[in-house]
Amino acid sequence: MSGAIVSAEPAVVRTRVLRRLDALLQGVSRLLMIVCMLALAGAALVLSYSVFARHVLKLATDWQDEAAVFLLVGATFVSAAHVQHLRGHIGIEAVTTLLSPRVNRVRRWLVDVVTLAFCGFFAWKSWTLFWEAYVDGQTSSSTWGPPLSIPYGLMAFGMTLLTVQLLLQVAIGACEMGNPPGRDTPPASNASNRPGGHA
Image 1 (cartoon, rainbow, N blue to C red):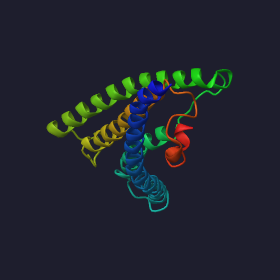
Image 2 (image 1 turned 60 degrees about the horizontal axis):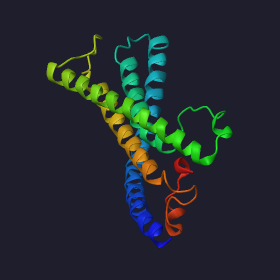
Image 3 (image 1 turned 180 degrees about the horizontal axis):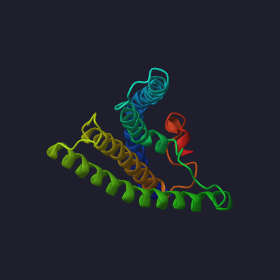
């Protein structure tokens, strides 16, 4: 009995350390969410101005559409890690209700592993696109011609954050795999380290 407790202790410590890293990443993600909300508001303002300038003032609008797209791309990709932490991406709940908590935990962990592999590849590819656009000085084909390294850089940064978030979730899931549900962390740290995404 005591041997089982001793062998379980390193897994609990590892889980606690991983959860602290996850909380640190979540703090960064929350700050970035404020920036993303401002970017969405900025995109709405830019598009509203574009409609007003085009139809009321009869002015040419050559930069507004691309500026709005850049803001939306940045907001979408940079906020992805926060959404993943909350497990807010679209999911199908029908199968989840039929499975036991232990099987559901394994299913969620396997989905996280596959998602991590995809997002890791996507992040690597985004960084290569960013680097090519930066080195070659690639710009968009519009008359405004902003550098394409901006949206590629935002995409790469956001996908990297998402990959790190998934890596932490996979590591936490692996540490908790042998524990029965509800015994993932010591009782003292349970309340503070169980945000919505880990319930």
